[in-house]
Length: 575
Image (tube, rainbow, N blue to C red; front, side, top):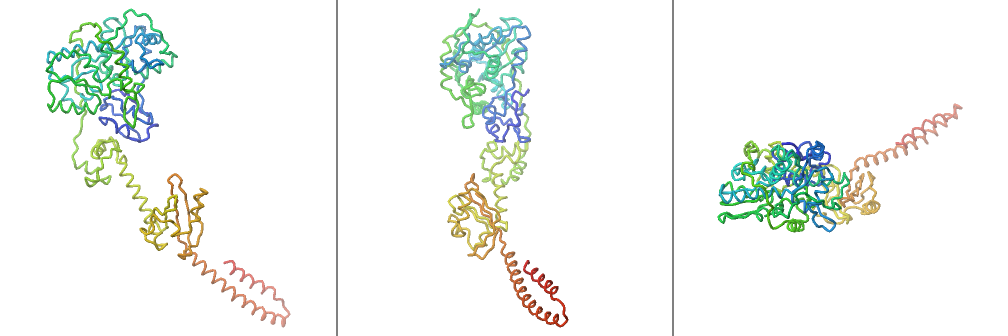
């Protein structure tokens, strides 16, 4: 599969949100960034919408559209009916197809029609299939993401898919019948339609999203809201199949003439997965099921301007307004369409089943053991890594799609254990206070130094242990103090004290290094030197008298002797 969704690796911040919201987990985390696995992707666009860093982008095909227009062949736009919710005027009223066609002609298109005409062709085929009871269960094939989901993950349900073209393809077939030699470009809210056009070549020549079209209009400085409709040779009437882009819209257009069948509309991949499981297990009977991967159907597509991530979930931010816009724009009757034979509209859906290597429980247990999960209660299934369960994540590790460090509880526990080991085993005393100067944490070295039990001091004011003034000054002045020598008289300890105020975490950290032994040795040495100096003074005084007496007899000076003894005294004083 061509990469229709690309990743801007520099923008990926390792939040795993795309993995968390991918319904089929078709994302591999490698090189500190998320990579889409094309062979497993169903192109629902959830990862594109929920990415908080806008690290994913849709392949832009405007250059292909421009090349088609520049080729000289007439190019017709097939405009998805959801345009009525995406393109509105200043009063939030839907722009007409005539206004859209005027704007598209300014880009070089020969004309524009609604894909709803193709929907009218296909929905007739749906009615005929149900009427003839061709299949016990019939699944609509309008949504290519649903088709890919079945082909890749539920191939057992392939016999129930209606073997028909999508409305996009049917409309292109119809346009090319009416305009020989024409090229067609589908424009809509969906990413997966790009794959559908490429996978079934020769029907649709190019696919653009609404976002691509809007950007193209912007580049050409075309204000579609101000485009007056032109007279068209074959104006489009208000067709009933404009309802297709809302949940239940297909059903509302169908005749539903077979009372033996139940008609269902299911949207959202998770709901569809459950329905497919029921179908495969034989729990459903005599059903026509309209399936749409996006919640709300096409008006909830990833390229709709009102679709965004709210609390990390892809949803239409104006679902009611968009539904009303589509409902108001739709007519009450079908447009007359050409009666195609079933063969012309037929389409095959081969299995694209994703190959899975069966990995035993022992291998999964070994991965779990590496992240400290040796008991069932250790498996929190918190979903932080993006996977529903710890075992799903372990399986992804074995498949090369994830790594061990994606487990947040494991990393937190590892970091806490590492920091706790340092604090617990360091010979330096460490005390952590809150901004109210209450003891929040104290290590073993501090308890030993201050002759206190940890549980007796936690939550109490630091004044019970130490002079609070240095802590108050550091907090008020927001200026840390490092390696200041302090004597703790109550404990008869000399320490080098560091006090750090971490404003972001609202804590004050005190680190004290016990230098009592070194200080005591220094004091002892100082006392020894002082005693030696005193003795030296007495010796000097006595020796000077003796030397003077001898010198007076010999007639020599005592200056040199005095200098030598004085230097000895100064040397001792200096130490």
